[in-house]
Figure 1 (cartoon, each protein chain N blue to C red):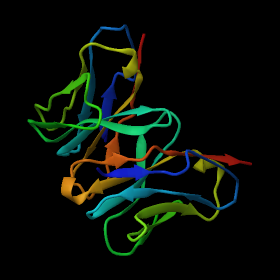
Figure 2 (cartoon, chains in turn green, purple):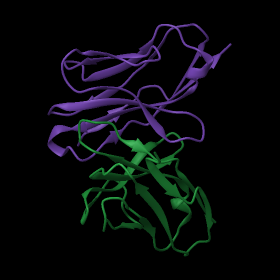
Figure 3 (tube, rainbow over the protein chains, first blue to last red):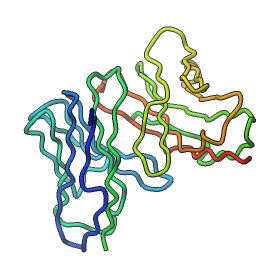
Amino acid sequence: NAGVTQTPKFRILKIGQSMTLQCTQDMNHNYMYWYRQDPGMGLKLIYYSVGAGITDKGEVPNGYNVSRSTTEDFPLRLELAAPSQTSVYFCASRGRVDTEAFFGQGTRLTVV
Amino acid sequence: AQSVTQLDSQVPVFEEAPVELRCNYSSSVSVYLFWYVQYPNQGLQLLLKYLSGSTLVKSINGFEAEFNKSQTSFHLRKPSVHISDTAEYFCAVTIYSSASKIIFGSGTRLSIRP
């Protein structure tokens, strides 16, 4: 019963490098989300998806891209890493809008 | 735009004392309301939720929250806290008209002193 799985758990990037944060869920949820968490700032929504092939921007989408080719997977792409992208990233999913979201364990990203 | 405000960034309390974590939201339409808890180095997990019906909702570990529509609030309370309640607590809303999104508050760090 895996739930929401994020990889990697930790990563250090150099400025200008790119990477993909992986997120997969095994609950057949339609809704998936990417958040970043910075100290004292709560969670800010980066991108979300309401189903395979459908994505939309959240509050802080600049510098990120997403795709949703399957129900299970929702990868987040950083093209040109910047120090401002140092954060903890959480992926979440939920089946219906009146149910809770299930979160992954997070990816701690440092850009130096 | 919709928003969620958690009025206290940190709340220190003594063990076995009562606690209230405050949450206010702004929305002109109906909402679903949630409280999540985050233990150190973990993801968030649901504590309790309000969808409709009784305005007082309870969790299995003694927390409760009351939805107040006129005050647009959803404060979280516990009559007697335990060391194990040390965590960060997030209030969140889903707006009916934009039901896909979940908007989170900035969080309240609850620290329990023995």
